[in-house]
Image (cartoon, rainbow, N blue to C red; front, side):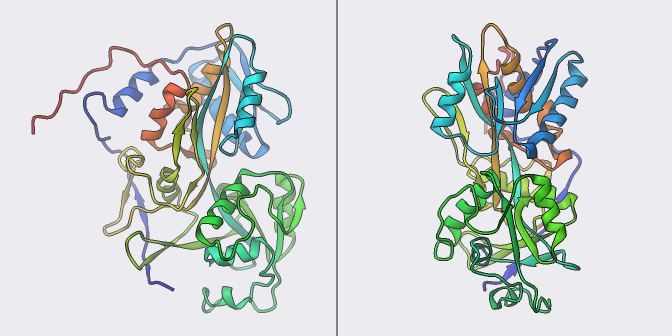
Length: 384
C-alpha cells in the first residue's frame, strides 16, 4: 500500500472571493440574488424521502423572505411541476418531465446540491475502518462476508474483528447513492467490481424504506450498507475511511468521511454539461479531484493545511431539480431558482447536504432562466 499523508481542513469564518474580469462570477451571482420575486402560493416538490429535509430547509429560508410563499415535499409517483431527483436525469426522465408540463411551457433542468455517500456500519466500539475500493466492492457484491477477512485485517492493524460476520443490508428501490458508489467502484476497482453502474446493489437484504435501513443497521452487530454521510452521522454509525491516490505521485491520502469541508472539495469533481435545450447536468462527483475551474477555495470558506493536496471525498451523488417554466404560472420556476440562489444554498449544510461549488452554481442560472440585472458593475481589465 502506498504511503498515506496526513489530512485535515480548517474552516474560516470569512474570505474574499476572487474575481475574473470583466464580469466575475461573484458579481453575476450577487446581482442575481437581488431578484427574489415572491408569490402567495405553495409549490409541491416531488422528492425521495431522504431529500425531504432539504425541501424543508429551503422552505424555511424562503418563508423568511416571502412569508406567503412556501414549498412542500411530496412523495414520488405523480407528475409534478417541480421535482428533485437523486441522480443525473436520463433522457427518458427529462422527456417525461417535459411532457408533464402544461402546454406552452418548457422544462428547466439543473444540478442543485450534492450528498456525500459513505459505507456505513454498526460494529460495537468501532468508529471507522480503512477500506479500499476493492474491499468495498467485495463487501457490496457479497464476496467478502466476514469482518475478519484477510483483506480487511491487512488494512486495519490492531483492530480485532475475529468471528464477526458481515450483514449487508440495502435499499430495495433504485438509489442515487448506490448509483454513485457503483459508478465509482467501476472506475477505481474494475477488477473487483463486476456489476458496472447499478442503482440497486446485487447482494444484501432489501429494506423498503430509509427508516427500515437504519433499523436493520441497529439490529445487527456487523451490519453494513451504503448511506449518506449525514444520515450515518445522525445515527452515530461507523463509516469507512478510504485511501485516495494523489495525482501524479505514488502517494495516497486517507480520506475520512466525517469532514464536511472535504465534501465541499469533492463535489467540484462533477462533470458539468449543457444540452441543446439549455438543460444542465452534473455527473456524480467521483474521485475527489476538482475539475479545473470548478473549485473556488475562498467561496467555499475553507483553507487547506500547509502541504495538503486539493482532494476531497470521492463519492458524492448529485441531486437535480426539474421544473416547468410556465408563462402562466411562474411558481415552479421561482421555486427551482430559489434552491440555487444563496438564500437556498446557504441552508443545506444544516441538514448535511453540500451546496454547489460557486463556479458551478453561477453556471446554473441560464439553465434555470435566472435573470441577471443589467446594471452589474464592470470590472476593468487589469493593467499588469
